[in-house]
Length: 181
Image 1: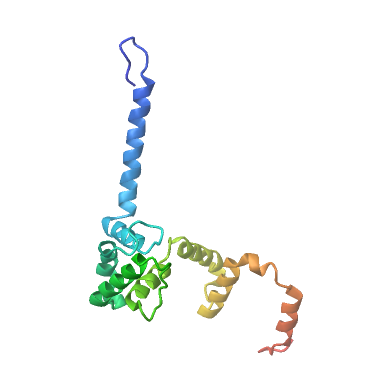
Image 2: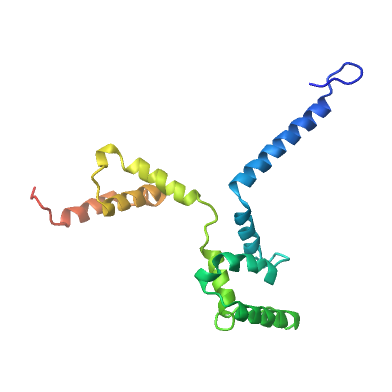
């Protein structure tokens, strides 16, 4: 710790130094988790956000097209025409522009891309955690269908609590068995 001219501990400079170190650490962690390519894609997705100032700006959308264009089969010439048509209607003062897939097929491809991208990996991680709990060493010979069904029941445990177990047992008793009881 640093001391000021009177010999007292300078807490303010200590706090500022600590805050600076924490901020640098957080920024380094963010850069590690979100590399430049990921950040560029997020900026591109911002171009599909109707509340953004970059909404449907060609420069912003170009980041998405550069990454996903070949997969989506986006025709850039037609996309430019669609954007020009959108701007013409939007600036005419006739009200809200309806995004009809017939008139804006390339823009619709980009909007569908935005809707299909996962927000986080939490759902996938949750599924693997559920499978780890379900597939124990005692259950290591489960076939894929049974494992999938058990994982679904385990992950949707709120819904399974509402099941009427007596009716499930009655249905089970009506099914034919390999070995009669």
